[in-house]
Length: 611
Image (cartoon, rainbow, N blue to C red; front, side):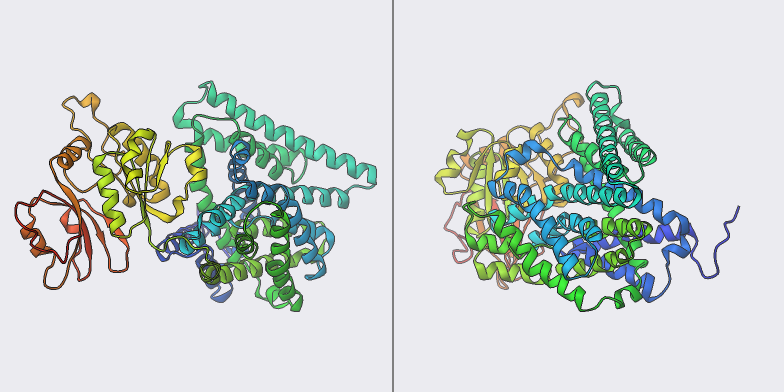
């Protein structure tokens, strides 16, 4: 049965397809261009919405817009709750704890004051919007840090603050909205206090009950592995719906608490659940942002005056710096690092999505100034993303707080051949880090002056202590094929599967001992196993760095070194690419290659090129 649509309207199915394609497409293109996805999503949404009129959410999707955004925001906040692990927070740096326990409430206060006194919003709207402004945009911080390559401590402070304050900001906004809702619907002060207490209590009980039920069912094996994600989604929607039914607008608080409970329940399958939720959140965040950008009212933006400019300036240059600098008093963090963190506070998609939702809810309560929340959120996000996107790297360089400009390589496994490979990388001025759970395996690397970490790369300690943002490639090269496969498979989503390598596995005669070829990383360099590479080193083979020139190109080098293996290619700009065959070398002048070659039988035929 065909569905009648308004003249000139897009069919709902086509509208959903367009939103999904533009949202995910913007995310992918942003990854390729190494820029915040929010910029491209903003442009795409505005182009198909206010500029061309191709897509109008109210016209083309109609009554579905509100429920879709509500459910999407609920899932986004639930995923944010999944990131708040109290155990990891207790082991975090002192500066991170200060930014959370002192910075979050102080940021809420300063943001609300900027909204009230500069933007002219009422205290009710300011309290709700100011709560979500605590969030500094985890989806925006990550690409900014990858591009700017900050030194370890300021990068960790910004990253952890964004992750932990994400659910805290959501909680603050939800609680503030509950207070505003009760105060505007209750008839007496006593009734308001009672309604607020009951509302928060019911949402908390339902959230904890939902989290407890999921944790209990998963730990006891009552839910098969393949049904865990569907059961989690169904439970999330049930808690959201029941809480909203019992007390209007309490569902967001319930699902956030549910996410926090599950994050601290030590579930064996927690990482898989969280990763799937992250994938779902990418899709939902993209869709919500495209919907909000397409439905943006240019007339509302046009009604913003000098107060909006003053508001943004106060947030960027007063509220944010004051919050950070006060929070970090007595923390022992150098002032230059404090200043960098204080002047870096980009807001992201989550702020716009949640602010847009609460703006509509406040309008329904009769707060007319809430109509400005959506436009102010767009202006704040667009300004902070553009400003920090262009200024973070040069500002960090000015303060002397940038790490290495060259992407490095993490090598897991200490052995004679990995140590020799790491030394060659260092000679080529490529940052390298070697890790191994066995302290003794790193003795050779430490003697050679190679940075090392004794511990499991998959441990929480490694996540907290290592500055992995400066490394773009990973090599799993222990003598345990199963562990190499585990590491490569687990870290592939973080580094990208094209950037995760492992030493070739031992060939097994029995199929029962063979690991699936779909797991693990790409093969590296030589057609040799870990034991075979160690044997070559003992036989005198060496890693060498060779510069290719116009006169002595790759073909000439290969003709003279037919037995050698190529492990890496380094461009003239210093960018490294690990290889597993000659076709990936892409010879060009001034390219350097790292090779493993047998001992010379005669004098070196190319002294100027080899080091």
